[in-house]
Length: 446
Ligand code: HEM
Image 1 (cartoon, helix red, strand yellow):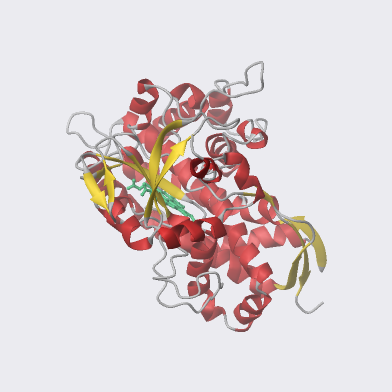
Image 2 (cartoon, rainbow, N blue to C red; image 1 turned 90 degrees about the vertical axis):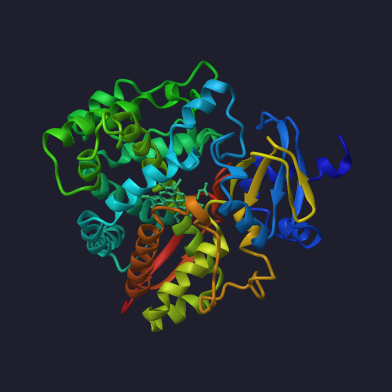
């Protein structure tokens, strides 16, 4: 174990991220090399591993992400943390995120159609309404007040939109909150046992599914959420929802997709649907719960940008892109080399783990002049926050629409927002998570 490798532990030590993301440290590494080797030591909150190549520069990240034949999403799946057993690997490989062409292409094609459907157009029209209701709920009759931006403003937006997409009863949406917390917050004891859902208020499907909710062991630890046993309640819910939608199809994406379910002609199988439900409930949820507060932190630290957006809402689309770059809600994804190859001088062997750092790429000074500046007029802004290539985020447009809507509503309604206590960050080396952001707000005209 060399000193220089000990010095790299911060890259994967989940505890480090509670203090904030290591943007400056990544810059120091990136200026020295495009790709570096990182040993993975056993740490109190990390199981250790065989080590990985970390890709730090924008051009090389794109090179990896676009070449699925050499850099597989399937071989070792897409997380920095290795699946614990071959069975766990086989389980996550059932999700499109962790597939390579041609299986991946087939599922993605089916989903792209569903995302282009009337249901999504209707959803986009509703997003602004959701934003208005969220702010109404915070303000009530008051002209000024305090709240937790994460819990009271950011968290509900993706839940409301996902409930629209899936056509599931709105009162069940906090189940998705708990599921996403369990998966993304696995390393964080506060999130891994999340239980915000009120079963009394839920639908019959929710109550039925909840009977299978996994329980913590005697040490308070939940089963690994990247195993089937860690998410039995989600699978039960997806199954019952699919049955319901088959009986009574609606205009939603689930109904559209299920209309294509057919084990015989090889379209979407029920099992594939259940795994898609898992992926959407998690990928479309926590990402925004972290991305929206990340954008707010950017505005709090840059009051001139807040004022510019109040004066000219037409700046919002560019501002949202810059928020996504500056905060980078998903910090990295992993690939596995299918054969020996070379990347920026690094000799990568077949089977090696290759981790692309979106966060580092988004601050690459070769592509983003003065990358530390939060510049809402930055143009072009080819950030990699939604990935690149065949796995480019399916929900990117939906995510952007939600962020625009909520920040348009906030800048339209509030004269000022100020922070009243430091944010608390998630213990995760995967998502740049914000657990709380206490603010004081004041309405315009008061
Ligand atoms: C700010 C919010 C979001 C961020 C930062 C984000 C980020 C990402 C990234 C980086 C990937 C690429 C993974 C890879 O290359 O292996 C991805 C894929 C994906 N995202 Fe998102 N995402 C967001 C919101 C959403 C939403 C709202 C949805 C759906 C409702 C969604 C659904 C998906 C799906 C299904 C994939 C897998 C695509 C595939 O494998 O082809 N995401 N996302």
